[in-house]
Image (cartoon, rainbow, N blue to C red; front, top):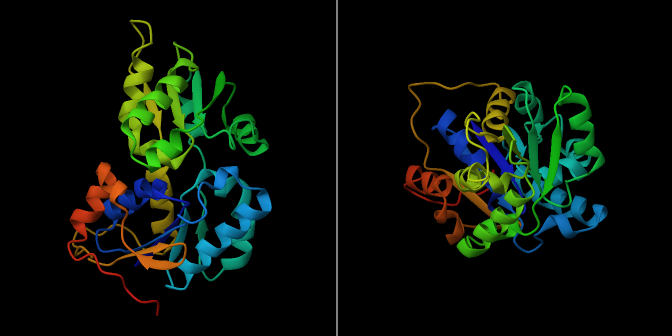
Length: 270
């Protein structure tokens, strides 16, 4: 099985690690766009064009499924990506986990990039899936960039700023950007520090696990206990063959990929 993932940067690590845990035998193709990031600051037309370039670079390696491991690209470019690649390659978008977060009741906060916060897409998800829950949208300017650069001080500052905008009695936080899942425990600690005593533990809801499971299903296969770990990890940087950036190793997900892929080789497109 071969699963491809695309994003502007290392936000795809969480979903890639989730795929690796589900299917240690899967070949992975990670297609990023360091020349064009961040996508959130681009016009819709430009973002869609760059997303299509990154997707086509991944599709050249003939994956069984492609994960759009970016909320912003899913919001703005998913229809174009599906029109270009399906039915040959199933395309799985990343949707904020609003429905399961709201199902637990209580107040919910959605942390997302400024490009996604307040968008018609996110507001539609809240309307359709929040089931009457009280939802606060929290923009997180700079957080994805800080995570991308593995800048510890900037991560602390941007997480603290978003936590200050989050209601103290919030029961759950939806991580509405794939980069945020790489610092989930830091987000949990920052939000939990301001909550009143007596509340249940804060719940965090990311999308990586559900997206990975959907990709495996769409690739017409499932987890197999007898699977043999794969050493095939293809990394594409704005279409060029490359390797995991050093910043990826700052996160557990990146270290997992590097550790499992004991022979980190670039495989040619077939």
